Image (cartoon, rainbow, N blue to C red; front, top):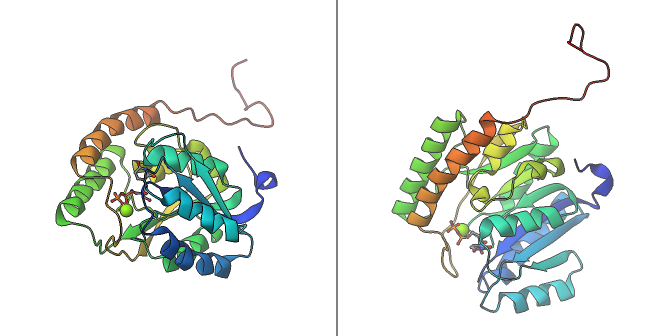
Amino acid sequence: MADRRDARFDLSLVIPVFNEEGSLRALFAEVEPVLRSVTAEYEVVFVNDGSRDGSAAVLASLAAVNPRVRVIHLDRNHGLSSALRAGFLAAQGQIIASMDADLQNDPADLPKLVRAVQDGADMACGWRRDRKDPFVKRISSKVANGWRNWRMGTSIHDVTCPLKVLRREVREVFYPFHGMHRFLPTLAEMAGFRVVEVPVGHRPRLHGESKYGVWNRVFRGMRDLKAVKWMRDRRMTYKVVDRPPGGAAE
Ligand code: UDP
Ligand code: MG
């Protein structure tokens, strides 16, 4: 497990990017003062997931003027789960946050989630109580959250809210599979981490397009749920202890 010794910063913000050239400058301008208000020791890790627009050039210009910005490029477009994993593994912060590049989350909500983790939670997830997405997307998301909670015995309202904050060691339990991004709090809870939800604002998308519709989410999510449930049921729970347990068989 990673620990404090290999963390170089207090806070890393991971942002996956696929064709978001229209949002990136405004996003960074909003995000940077918020991060600075939390700690001077922050970094922003942009993961360019094979963008085919001008995103790479915009990210290069942001990195050129701010040493706190790091840009990682994937070899081609691999999807949100891969981009998040690459960013989480590259992050050098003791606390790691994630947010979409589309500015649908309000960066001003980030400190609330950081505080929840500083106050003892292992992971804090945003909960978009008033989502500004198309009706069909909101409904399908409600169904998916309800189904997931019912099958897993969890009670997380908004599993896929992109605004999340976690202790560094939590990333270790995000097994790499396509679709992982729909199960992050579920995977954390399964591993015994304490997950809390924090109500956050939500805004309509102003630039670019959503890459995830209804059909590419609901059915894949249901299929993946079976695998995640299986993993939970087969999870190892041993602990290494200092002395042999009393009365244990040789
Ligand atoms: N994204 C990515 N790779 C992809 C698709 C999306 O890195 O193949 C990024 C995208 O740029 C955004 C986030 O993942 O920052 C979520 O995508 P999007 O906002 O399109 O999904 P939605 O929020 O509409 O479900
Ligand atoms: Mg989005």
